[in-house]
Length: 248
Image (cartoon, rainbow, N blue to C red):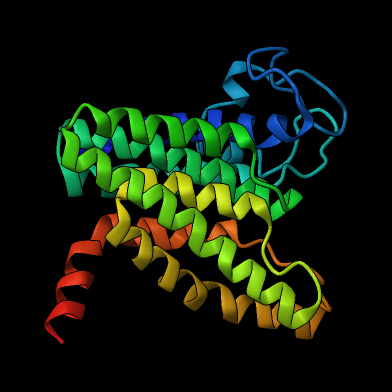
C-alpha cells in the first residue's frame, strides 16, 4: 500500500516536473498560466491532466486540436513514479528519503532539459549545491567536509576532463554546466560516490555518443543525462559497488 502511495505521489510530482522541464528554459513562471496545449494553446482541463491516466485515455493527443502530445510527459511521470518507489525501498520512511527524493527531482529536470536544449539550469545546479551543503552541515563536521569535498572533486574532475579534451580535440569537450552539475551531485553524495559517478557516467554516455556521432553526425552530446543515470545507480547500489571494487 505504501509503495502504491509513493508511485501515485511520484506520478503527481512528475507532472509538475514536466512543467519545470518545459517552462524553465523559456524563463516562464512555474505557477501560471494553467497548463496549455503547446500547439493550439487550449487550456488543459483538470481531468485531462491526471498523471499517466489522461495520456492513455487521450491516446497521446490534444482533445481539441488532435495534435500529438510529446511522449516525454508520460515518460517523466512514469519514471518519477517508479524511482520514488525504488528510493522508498532503499531508504524507508526516513529523512534521507526526503533528501534524495529532492535530489532526484533535480536530476530528472536537468536530464530532460539537457536532452532538449543542451543546457542545465543554474537553478538546479546552484540550488541543489546549496541544499546539499546546507543539509549535510547539520549532520556534523565530518559529513559536511565529505559533502564539500564531493562538490569540489566533482566539479574539478569534469573541468579537468574538459580542459584535456579541448587541448586534444581543439574544441569544447565538456560544458561548464556539467561542471556545476557534478559539483551539485557531489554535495549530496560525498567524494567517494561522486568519483564513482564520474567513472560510471562514460559507460552510459560513450555508446550513445558514438552512435549519435556516427549515425546523425551530432556535433555536441548532452552529458547531464548520463551523469544523472550514474547518480541514480550509485544512490541505489553504490555501497555494493564500492565494496566489490575494494574487495577485488
